[in-house]
Image (cartoon, rainbow, N blue to C red; front, side, top):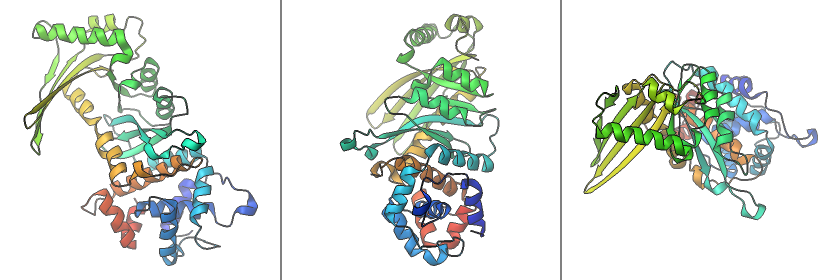
Length: 378
C-alpha cells in the first residue's frame, strides 16, 4: 500500500482494531476498508456490489493494495464490517475530517437525527438504526455521527457527538429534542454558540416565550428593543416569506432563566414562515433560545442554514446513496456502512472539478479511475 491513496487510508484507519482471529485473516483489514470505501464512492450500495467492484477493478487495486488472496467475498465484507468496532471506526473518520477541515468562526453546525428505515430485523428483535449526525453548512461536510443506543433517544446521543467535535467559534443548531440545559452547557463549554428550537418539550418555557412574542406583536413591538428581518424567496411556483424577530432584553432573559440553568442564554427568537404554492398557503411559527447577541441577520442565517442537514445530507444520502433502501443490518454493519457513506459524500463534495450532482459523480468515479484517484486525494 505505497501509492498516495493507500498511504492516506493507512494513515487515517491503521488504528482500527481487526476483530478477526489470526487464523481467519485471509485478507488484510486495510485492503478490505479501502476496497469498500472505493466501491461506495463508485456507486456500490451493498456488500455484493462491493465485491463485484473489487473484481472489476482488480488490476487497478493491485497497483496499491497487497491482496494476498485476491478480492474478499461479499460474505467477508459483511462479516468484517458487522464486527468492526464502530466507535473506533468513527474516531478514525473524525480524525480524518479534522485533518482536512478548518472550522471558521461563525460556521453553522447543524445536528439532527435520521433513521435507516430498512436496517431493522424483526426476527431478531432489532430496531432500525437511528443516527445523529453533525453537518457543517459552510463547508458542506459531515463532521461526525453517533448511533442512538437501543431504548434510548437523541437526548443521550447528542452530547456524545458534540463532545468529540471541534466546535470552538461555531454556531450549533439543534431541533427541539436537543433543547436541553445540559446540551446548552456542553456547547458553551466548547467555546461555541447555540440556536436551539423551543417547542412543547419545554412546556412552561415555551409558553412564556410564545406569550411574550404574542403580546409584543399585538403592540407592534412598541417600547421593545428587537431585531427584525423579512426575506422573501421564490422558485418553481413557490413563494416563501419568512419573518424573524430577536429580543435580547436582560429583564426578559432574567425572567426566563432565573437560575442560570440555560448556560450562555443571551437572546430569544421567533420565526414566522408563510409558504404559498398555487392556491395553497401554509403558516408555521417557531421559537428559539440562543446564546447569540440578538443580531437578527445572524439569527436568520443560522435558522435557515439548519435545513442544510435535511436538504444536503439526509436527502442526498437517500437519493444518491439509497440509504433508506439498504438492508444491511447484521451486527455493526449498518453503522459502519453509514460511516463509509459519509466519507464518500465528503470526498465527492470536496471535488469541484465535475459540475454534476452526487449520484453522477459516483458514476463518473466508477467509470474513470483518474477521477476516482482525484476524489480520493481530497
